[in-house]
Length: 233
Length: 233
DNA sequence: CAGTGGTCTAGACCACGCC
DNA sequence: GCGTGGTCTAGACCACTGA
Image 1 (cartoon, rainbow over the protein chains, first blue to last red):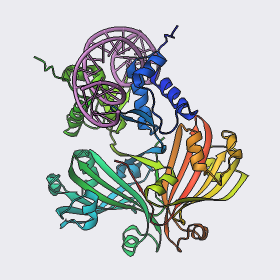
Image 2: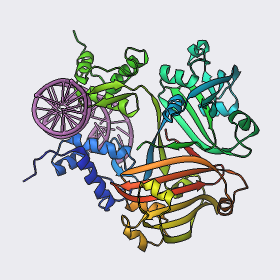
Image 3: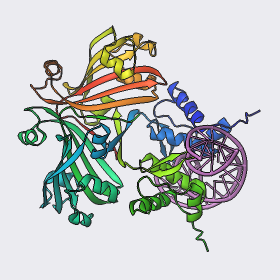
Image 4: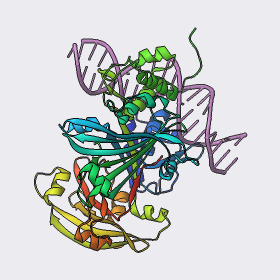
């Protein structure tokens, strides 16, 4: 007789994961249909679905309509990065936050920014260069391009009071965000702005956002020497 | 009369997000109960729940049993990093992958590794230093500590054939993974191993994994100059 | 075009954590 | 205790896409 207790989706997820780990199903194999598993476990199909969604999100399996569920051949380690508003990051470290607007101008997008947005033609955008400070020491320098067609209101915002980072986060949601992280040797202008030493290794975060297909903002943020980025548990 | 068409959870998610963005509900405010929203939208409570789960996961709201749903005071940009198996990363760039085991020994954990695992006492672990190569050029150097109590089988694996990275991913799932990213100036030993130049800026990824409360592995991976990490979609 | 995953519903019960 | 979110069920229909 089939057991009749309630099954949690986590138990079922773990069962399926175990079957994958002990090679009941190997990389590239097709798993049974959700309904099949539901019968096997004696639970509702939606419970299996919940479990499968979790496995798919963590990169263990791949799901396709009509194509069924397959075990991924190339497992990945998937981590979620929380990039907080810089002011909060600074304040959470117990430091005093300040912000300085260095330059603001309307310019046609250079090739690098066009590439970030996948634009074929240059456009006029608002370029904002600003420095975030912690206890009056340079923390992050940001060079940001904002698309005036998508975000016309930004032209009227006083960016010496609220920084572009916070204004955008609060007022302009994005539906897509591309991120690129790398290390770069400090240039003379970095040294000037960030008060870094010659040849310091700097951590760089480039972030480009869209709402739908419309470009919002493309940002290159250079952190002070010693900066680290963590994942949240 | 209440509209009777089906509502998708994404529509509802977007509606609620809009209400937050246009300040119907501000940072720190409590949102109506799920059931309340369900009545308002004329849909099932579970549909609201699905929408709310998404908003919670993307960092817009915070949910607590009994405590209800509140708008987060500190919106974050949340990005998912996929860190693939190094071999696949290399092969996907169209390069030939090779791997060289440099050193392998059992040693007591130094303070830095103890800190990563939050251990109070040193333990003997397997230390594996290895180099990943792309087209015979250094790609990533990794210095890895593996907990022999949690993963005793690793002692018998021939790590000159399959590298520790792949063996662990295939054989040992983790339930928790901490990640730390930063930039570091190349040391003389980096220059030797990675064939980098004096003072190059190197990208460093530290990754520590556990299964339950049991430590699995702690890894410091130093990438060749010019390495970049991207987010997926 | 048909099979599979994705979603929605209505209703029930559970469990956590403020009050 | 009790109100809120979290989960489970059974059933229905939808939508994508590969056979």
